[in-house]
Structures are given as structure tokens and as C-alpha cells.
Length: 161
Image (cartoon, rainbow, N blue to C red; front, side):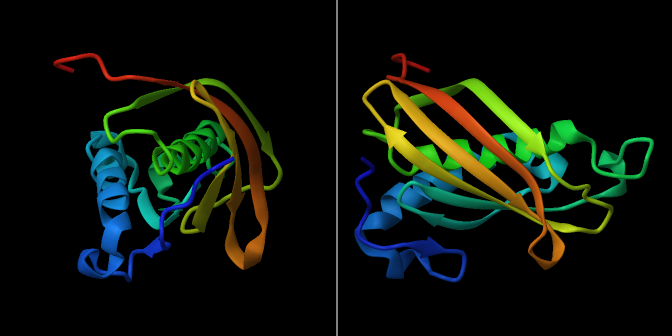
């Protein structure tokens, strides 16, 4: 099972108030925002907890497909971001790496330009080498937009990388 840090972190919590879990959640935030894709897509961390993460996106017109709804691949990216970030909160060491090895996304309802989406990722089970996760992508008025499951391979960082 997932071992929780002492307390939950939210964007409203200051780093100084997070105590011992600040190092874990601070490192997760740093890793998340290190990739240029987060700025390109406009995603942000909304909430972090032990084995949990919520990622937000306001749907821009640049991500719409021909029918005027969010292209499904970006829902997969959002679910992957939520689940991988949830896994990062329960890694054995801050340098441990992870990679998605399997993912399934079910599209339940469309998301449109301007919709505020919230992807809630959760670690279901973690072993030494694998993490099993799920995500819900929620749209306006609590509409379920997508459901996803993902499996991650956990491995040590290579020296010098």
C-alpha cells in the first residue's frame, strides 16, 4: 500500500507550512514544471497528496479537433500527467524514475474551449518496480469527461542523468 506523508499539500499551502512533506511535494512540483510541455499546454498542479495529484487545464482553442471539442489525445496527456504526478509523491527516493508502460483511456463526454478540466490521479497500488493508477478527468458541473488507468515502471536514476 501507499505510505502517506504527514499532511496534504495544496497550492494554498506555503512551503514553510508544509513541514516534513515540503521536500517531497516541492520535488514533485519541480519535476512536473521542468518539462516545457507544461507551459506549452497550460497545465498546472492543483493539489498534491500522498499517492494523489490533481492537474488542471483550461481548454484552449489550439487543442480542439475539427468538431470543435478537445482532441482525445490531450485527455490522455492530462490523465497521464495526473497519474504520473501521483506516483511521484510516493517514490522511494527523490531521484527514482518512472515511465508509463501501459495506459487505457475511456472518453465519456466532450470538453470544449474554455472548459476548466480537473484530472484527479490516484495510486491504487505500488510495489518496488510497478505502480498501478487511475485517473478521472472532470469537466464543468462535475461532468465525467474521461476515465483512465495506467501502469508505471519504477527504476533507479542512472548516475549522471
